[in-house]
Image (cartoon, rainbow, N blue to C red; front, side, top):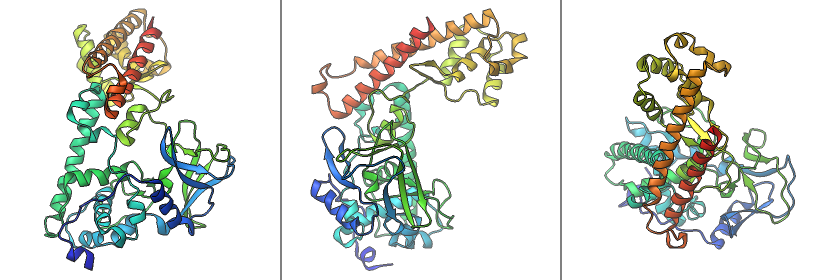
Length: 415
């Protein structure tokens, strides 16, 4: 079972803290002899915080970083650890992110005794994702983002309860919810895609993840173009960029084409002028508008919409409402004869003048309702002066303002 785990009175006494420049350099030195293509150096930037700076020019097609497999925390790493011993003797299985969370917590308590200590001690102590916010600050989010946060917290509690049940047979192992939340979001915000084989001790759900020390210091940009994959030839996880960077520039990668809502939920930040920003419209709210207008055959129309998965990606952006919203509204506005030919929506043609007017009317009602809902949240802020708001309150205010602008632009495009 291992000396450290046997002798430990309590697992999960986390000692990770905000990383200093010296600690970032320590991590860099730890990896220096193994990490190839040493173009990058950890640096604290004024606008983005810690990140990676290039020591020489980088050109499109360059591999900016290559982390050897031995420095990745993977399923194999967890299964070969003391946590792996617990997994192998239990009749219960966890998903990899749960198992990796326990691994991070146990390794954190070992401090210098852990081979991963230089990495663990530069991990953030807390996160700006809404899962870490106070209840009073969560009330400053729009209803859509609040619902997402509530669902995420429920899922997190379920995962934690499964861990507690899993650890119930181990008297020396206890983990608090806060400790688990910390470890979960360390993985959630930093993991890379790493293909691995199935294991009889780990569920297949979300198993293709790994942590890559140093690589996860790279910050996100919507303009970054990269290719990330494990290179079987050199046994390294590599990131290749298709951007150019001058000497001493901060090097960015892309976490994906994500809206600010997603970035806040998963990573704890938002970006101004994010080209991927959208505002989600709840399907039930759309149906409710149709019902309030006394449109007929609603149940039949709902079956058509739901059985054909048309009620997905119901969003609006600065370019207006998505195709899916228009398609749902067209179907809801159809008369009995038009409904027989509902597949005409895929041709993007006008169904009829009457249908077109009904769609526009519902669109205006929906967007105005959403806009009023957003504006009702602004009055909840303790101050109009951003300098007097907390970081989380400012994040909520910025996101709310972005959502308001999207709705205003969508309404303007209807006119």
